Amino acid sequence: MAYCGPMTQASSYMAACGYPIPVQANPTDLYLDLLTPGAESDASDALVAAFATRQKPQLDQVVEHSCAVSGLTAKEMLMAAWELKGPAGKGARLGSYAVPFYVQLRTLLLRKLRITLRNPAAMSMQIFMPTIMGVVLGTIFQGIGKTEFGIPQVSFIFILLTMLSLQSLPLMPALIEERAFMKHETSERLYKESAHILTTMFVTVPLSLIGAAIQTLIIYAFSGLPYEFLPTILGWTLLLFFMFDALFQCVAAVAPDGEQAMTMATPWLVVFMLFNGVVVTKATAPVFLRWVFVISPTSYALQGIVLRMTEDSGGVNNFYVKSMGYQSGEDMQGIAIIIGMTIVLRLLQVLALKFLNNIQK
Image 1 (cartoon, helix red, strand yellow):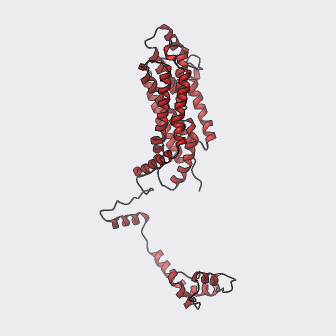
Image 2 (spheres, rainbow, N blue to C red; image 1 turned 180 degrees about the vertical axis):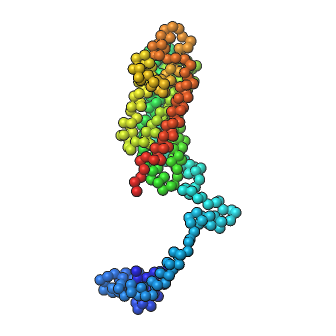
Image 3 (tube, rainbow, N blue to C red; image 1 turned 45 degrees about the horizontal axis):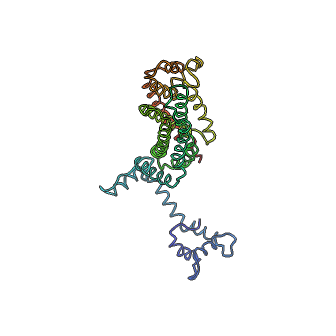
């Protein structure tokens, strides 16, 4: 070391050491010339020796004194800064985050809204595409509600629930991309993981929900089914949407990338789509797998809709109900299980976002 002190005093120090700065010279350039070993004006050895004689003893005393005196802790410095603000101060935050949770959530919501509004393609994928699919499927099943209840109506309900269940599946790659940004920002304690999840629930999920509702209403209008069944069908489809949306977001929080996310989500989709009373019934399922019907959300949704549509019908309809193994009085059980699964998946999503796929520093 050749000098320790303010830059404004460097020129006078160099002059005291025998190296005055010419009036028209650039002080910084001259310092570099004096302190670069091997340069034409090299005086590094002399300036290091002068530092050891002139400044080092005083610096050593300052260091020893500072080490002997205990300074303020981080908490004490924050409290001291708070007291300097007086009664009008907002208070010192002693936690890991600079702002409270509601400020984090508000800031993320505003940013998410701006990003969403600037990207019409994302909005069209969540609303426009379901509308197109609603028209296509509605055309395929046009007038199906005007015929006697049977296999075509059951197939119609099954396809409707399947399409609504897959509504959030294409969003997983985008969710994983957002997670990467979130991990960088939460690693710096800018906000909590739960604030990111709520932001997604308040912006992305409502857009998908609107698309799902529009698709359901369009298909239902084409089908010609009596409107007395609409509350039941719409209620079960939207309930199923929330559950599968939680499933896909949980998988997106766990999986390292989009390809593995699709691989992880497929088994759950296959199981729930098979064990529903249409493809696999309780009578045809292996005994050791019949417990799957107890937790299958699509089974409860199909059962609730089919029983509602056949409750005023004759014996032929009861034949279809019995063949599928459906039983009355399980609607509340199904609703409770689907809501419980949704809550559990959301909690797992929070834990996965907090502890998995962290940034390696």
